[in-house]
Length: 196
Image 1 (cartoon, rainbow, N blue to C red):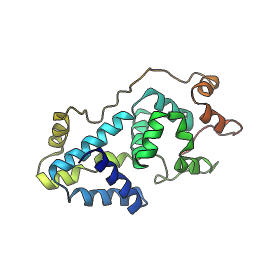
Image 2: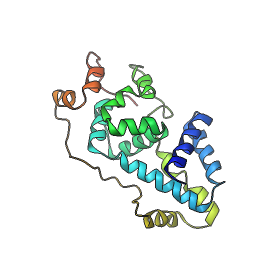
Image 3: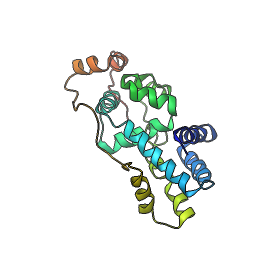
Image 4: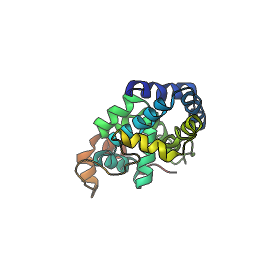
């Protein structure tokens, strides 16, 4: 499975199932139809793509949009971005300020004063684990073997190290300078970020 095949599976799961739980079941079923090597490929691309989004700039955009953040939350948010498909994912990674233009996010933010359900919240932690059961069922091996196979290809699994220049948002002016579109969105609103 190459990177294109990986994205086809991710995007087809989104068209076939509208909830996270159903998407995971769809991916599980389709991965069980693949070879063990293809399941390793899928896990590898899942981790490669996740690492592409592990940047300080995207972290800043995430914090600017939600007004809060944690290492785990940012990891699960990046999985959610993957779940939106290749075009959206690559656009936001290349231009983190464009995060505020993602329709799925705008629909949530427009519900001022509303609490988001776990299904709606822009995190998709379980996507990290979707290849585990199919791999174990196919090979009879423990998950550590899957990780070692991915690692043998030179890919680190679940790397949380961020790339780029480290910085923090110290002020509203700093955010406006770095993320003008996100700042314009929030200007004039009394709430400065999402609510879980």
